[in-house]
Image 1 (cartoon, rainbow, N blue to C red):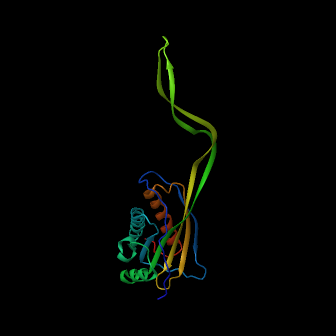
Image 2: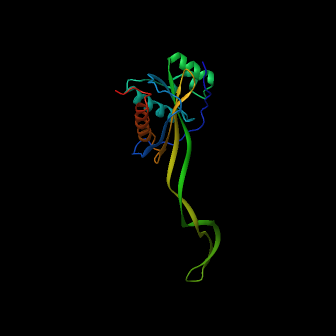
Image 3: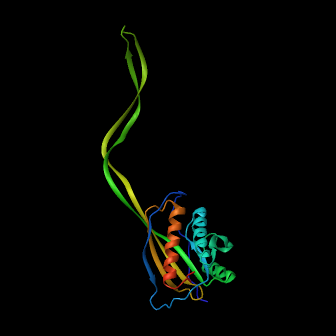
Length: 214
């Protein structure tokens, strides 16, 4: 059985667990020459070095697939796939769970939109000895704090867009049969953005014949 190599590089994501997200599937394409067929058992792989992020991401995707009566196995639950997955470990997981497809998501990029404004930047600070005299001419020595500021341009990130690539592989051949690309403007809100992405991906897979409709 021909399989494909897989590594687990870093994916997104610091976490906010609530809030609304804005996610779009900007591309959805069946591989040329592929005749779509419905898959009923998928191994779900979210590429992240952060264990909690990966677990949350895979569980949301797996739940969405199960709601479509698809058997879905999150890869973090497979002992051989808990860390970096070799070709052999992935092949063994597919064999043990009788998966006929692998749904994989990986991080592509983050694009930040910046705005430059004028702000004050501290250039020096410290403490000096200061001579004090009161009204009657008495003298004493004390400490005085000081700080210097300059007005300089300051970059401020006003928005960011995270891009992910989602790929469906046929488990028997290792062939990529479908791929999509998403853009998320609030990817730091893991649960809401992943739920939106799950709904979009499943809808695309149903439309293109890789998952049976209810």
